[in-house]
Amino acid sequence: MKLSYEWQIGLRYFRAGGRSSNGNRFISVISSISLAGVALGVAVLLVVLSVMNGFERELRVRILSVTAHATISGFGASLSNWQELRERARTQTGVLGAAPYVEQQAMLLSTHNTDSSNPGTNNSGALIRGVLPQEEQQVTDVQKHMQAGALADLKPGEYGIVLGDELAKALQVKVGDRVVAVVAQGAVTAAGINPRMRRFTVIGIFAIGMYEYDRNYAYIQLQDAQRLFRLGDDVSGIRLKLNDVFNSQRLAIDIARNLGGGYYVDDWSRKHAAFFRVIGLTKSMMFLILLLVIAVAAFNVVATLVMVVKHKQADIAILRTLGATPGSILKVFIIHGVFIGAIGITSGIALGTLLAWNLEGLIHLLERIVGTQFMDAKLYFMSDLPAAVEWGDVMRVALVAFVMCCLSTLYPAWRAARTEPAKALRYE
Image (cartoon, rainbow, N blue to C red; front, side):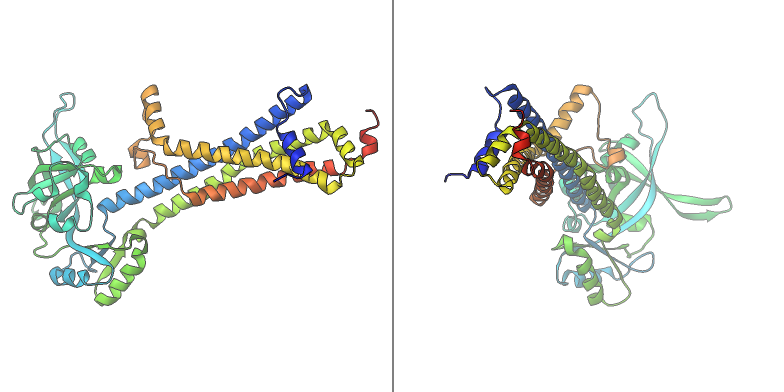
């Protein structure tokens, strides 16, 4: 299909260079710089949004590896008659699994210290969770993250314990070593309160990949936990796995209503609501801030087109004398600017998605080259930098950038359309 002369002239101005005059080559260089600016702005914005998406998704996956989708607990310190409640919970709509748990704080001590420069006892606070291994695997994915041993090795009466890898490092223990759990609940004597202690054997180590969990969590068998914390046959609550993790709040409310009164039902999204709200807010703010990069590139498009209009004054005047209307001249320079924006946006999307898909490998390569770790898990929860490209974000970035580039063409094109042929050709 033959293009109109406005399109042909606009494309010709865009491709100006090569064996053309020095002025045309200069305009071509300026156009290339403007195009590169748009591409770089789009690429940077896509990479940042992809990192935020990947961080949120990976964080959610790792949290749900340890945290149940919903929990049922009593209004007191413990929950009795939990066997009946567990069976009732399993029959609720949307529930895929239910498992009892005991959860309380304790101090872990280890006298096994292989560091000769720091002899003595290692200790660390920990959140000890008592579970039934076979049922726990129905509601969480801890077993998939075991580095040594297995959750199924927890046997009642054997007092085995599974530690997070960072917690094991802090205690300087490995599988086969022993730790002592110290509980604040103890016997009252004339000398004060004697804390209750129990020796455990390390039978496994897990690594979720989140410092918060790997540093603070430990698993023991449910009956051992009941004896350690003197709960009798009671538990702390029931953990649930739901069929729709993103609709857990509504499902938790429905379950609470169906179970009747006397129980407190919570879900993972409420427990971590503030954290994910901060991530969403940060993502929105980063989008607005980095749009300024694209805005700067759009200003470069304005400057480029103003220079083109100034350089092409004689061409514009000749076109006007040949019968071209101001609207046609306006269209020529809008086409020129739109092509700069369109090619820049397309290049930016390609560059941004390519960087996002390979970002984690590039970061690890850079860490090896400079000999440092950029992502400290103690500060950033994770030691990796995942990135997830969402095509909704790609379309949003492309649309906003394209609108900005189109708007940037209006003023130079309007100036070109107002060119008076007599004045432009006076000194030609």
